Image (cartoon, rainbow, N blue to C red):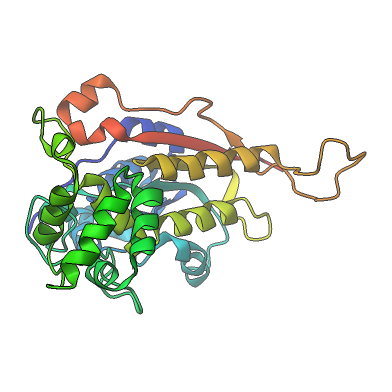
Length: 323
């Protein structure tokens, strides 16, 4: 099956990563391999790229799509939080550029068969990596955790204003019939949302289940926790994996993801966290990054016209300080 996905802000990514021949780059979220292909075109023949994705479909697709560059590619199935272990396995101390594209691929929405979309009736799974040990399906979450925990997930991860109402309806419905599919859950959400808010005023109106599905996906895959830990480790001088002047680019599609990237980059650019009244620094934190995007970059109107799903993308980039 063709892996259907359009890479977002492709030209901007290549520019901010400063891709150069002979250098080493990491695409932490391969997706449809569009970004990886563009990177490889800039760094070959002597450079190489490490591609990571927790979705096995993306890995299988990348091996086919990037076959012409096979001599310069390494693929790993797993989450980008394991990048340090992957580099150790390859005997690589540091790299020249890292890309994080945190969006859900069109393939996962349309062809994944895992219940990511409320527009299809599929098994309610939502795991990016179905082989990850100990991972819970979305089905297990909605059928087992208490109402308060559901409210917390919908409110914190989905910023859903009707979190209580939806959680209460889910608990009520599952007492009679377990919630097994995306279509079943979407209908429950629609039934729970007040009538005046559930009617679509136009084709571009947001479906009532949008935020609930997003929140569950984030919870199932521990997306925010892993992103926060990754960004924290990037700036740790003891385990730094960026070469001096190496670049980090992150594309987010959710305000909570963007907040993590923004705040972590600012903290790493600031360095010292001692109170302003201290006569000298005692925390010993040094500046690790220089932010390249003083204002967040968003897709151009021309790109949004071609790919409407790009409209919520936000790109931030930073460079490792040469010390």
